[in-house]
Image (cartoon, rainbow, N blue to C red; front, top):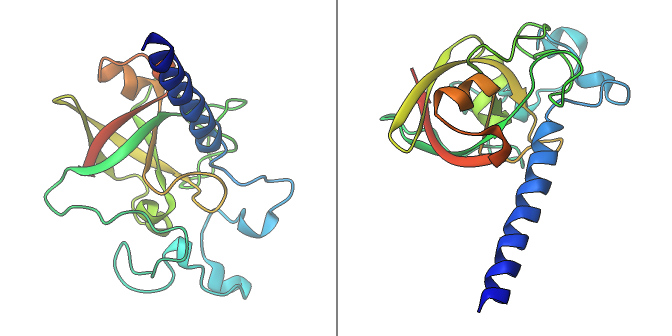
Length: 184
C-alpha cells in the first residue's frame, strides 16, 4: 500500500512541476513572437484582425467565444474557482517580460496578479483589484499582467506574487493551490 501512495505522490509532484513551468512561461517569447508584443492592445490601428483571446470579439469582459483561450465564467457573487501559482514580476525572474498592463516590471513584495487570458479580458481588468481566497483567508491583489493561455498557461490560473502567498500564510514552494477569486 505504501508503494502505491508513494507513486501517487510522485505523480502529483510531477504534474505540479509541469504545470508551474507552463504557468511561468505566461509571457510571449519576445524574440520570436513580435506580433503580440504590443502593450497598448490597440490592434485595430495596426491592421491586425480581432484576437478573440484579447477580448476583441465583443462586449463585456468575456465577449468572445471559446477559441481555446477562454477561461471559466467569473461568478458574479465571487468564488470563481481557480488554481493559484507563484510568479515573479521583477526583471530576470521566471515571469518573463514586463507586465502587459503597463510594460513595466513590479516588486514581488506588492500584492500582484496575472490572470489567464480569458479573465484578463484583453486588459480590461488591468490595475483593478481582485479578491483571492484560500482556506478562509482572503487578500486583495492588483491585476498587472496576463498569463497567456495561448502560450502554455492554463485557462484557470491566478498567477500571483510572493507577497500574495505570504499574506495567505502559504509557502511558495508548494507551487500551486486551489483558490477562489472575484472582482473586488
